Image (cartoon, rainbow, N blue to C red; front, side, top):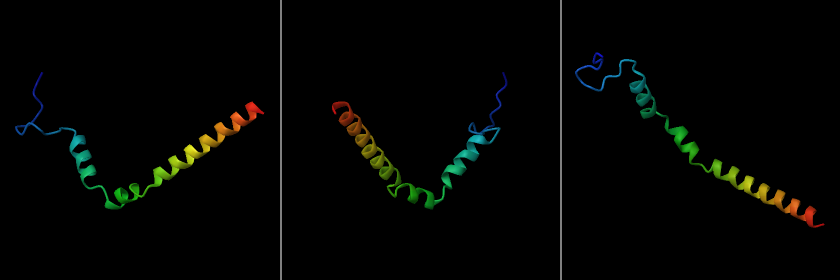
Length: 64
């Protein structure tokens, strides 16, 4: 099988790896700042509270 890499040894003939790295490197700063605002943590807290409420309601109905 022929060696399809160039003399540099890291050339991607399709360019997909290089394009992906460029995309990741130029990620906008706003998106990173928004993800650290605690949004997922609030959703998790609400989910846990709702789960505890459902379990308590089921237990109350089972013991009634």
